[in-house]
Image 1: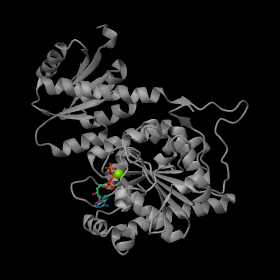
Image 2: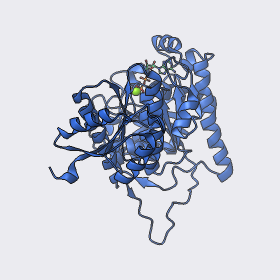
Image 3: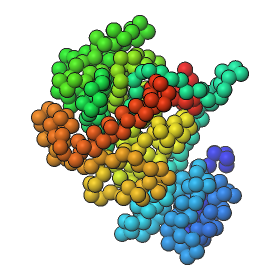
Image 4: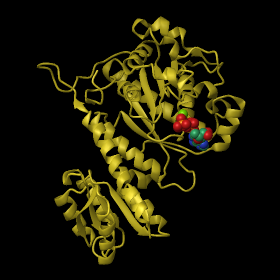
Length: 423
Ligand SMILES: Nc1ncnc2c1ncn2[C@@H]1O[C@H](COP(=O)(O)OP(=O)(O)OP(=O)(O)O)[C@@H](O)[C@H]1O
Ligand SMILES: [Mg+2]
């Protein structure tokens, strides 16, 4: 293997024996090499800037600058270098603080050679995937002689609100469904819920819909000829007063739907519905990115846990490349008070971003509502979790009203930016 292809590793530990041992283990791997060693946090920061290693192994307890502070500085100044923390057992709090500082992995000392090598390969691979994704991001070509960013277009059409989270099981489907109903109840305007979780959609189950109901898959083969009326014919009416566009019945049929088909469907729905609420699934593939691109607001659901935080950080980087501004990407902390999590203020400090919306944890109400087959914003309207959803609906509807009042029409879909996929 050519030297230039090797994974270059910076070793940071104040104990010389540990540095030597780690260097020896790395030396056995044909695809890895030691880029340098440092005996303290400050030396690590300097060395990381100079050597630009592919991976950094970082001890926590060191005399001058500790490993967490060094990690914080390096993740901001040399963001391409993923950091693996190393610490002795029982330091739970360190794990939490390391992840908040931007570390990608955590090895508990003593660890085996396999654990070390696997962790290095793992973070290096993830970094490569991340970079490959960014490489696809090409600046949107400006119209000849035209402005770089598209001027906001005033349009009197519906608002598309997508629910995204880079991690599964955080409550997207539950919250999206209840928000759609709450928006309809509080504004009395037409609302459509789109099950954009194309391969895994479960809104049909949650809303107790017939297995024979029409789905978006009924449009496969005829998307180009689909107009508002045709689209309306595959929407399903729900007893709550909202309409639903269901996901395909099988993952195979989901694969037949292209990004451009999704864009067309969403744009058509804008013409008739005041709010289009879109559920998605954790993917950076073309289908989901198109949903996010086409949306006005992306509610990024997260739970206040370290793993969730790490993934949201990566998504925020992707979103920035895509040109989504702070109004478009809004964080929502779900299950806000469930035990074992991190404080919202710590998360905000770590992400450098406010979490404007929170939803309490209330498993009991959710289970009761599911058993009754009714969204909890209807069956348990007085519960705190329902109130949180109505508050979110109020903020979204209020913002739209304000935008309409200001421009004489509704808020524009997007203001230029970059795209992952050329269309
Ligand atoms: N605020 C909450 N309080 C208590 N439980 C919640 C809350 N929000 C969601 N849940 C529960 O979390 C679980 C996952 O929710 P849901 O299926 O909506 O998540 P999802 O992000 O759509 O998951 P998937 O990745 O599988 O699509 C469900 O059991 C749901 O009842
Ligand atoms: Mg879901």
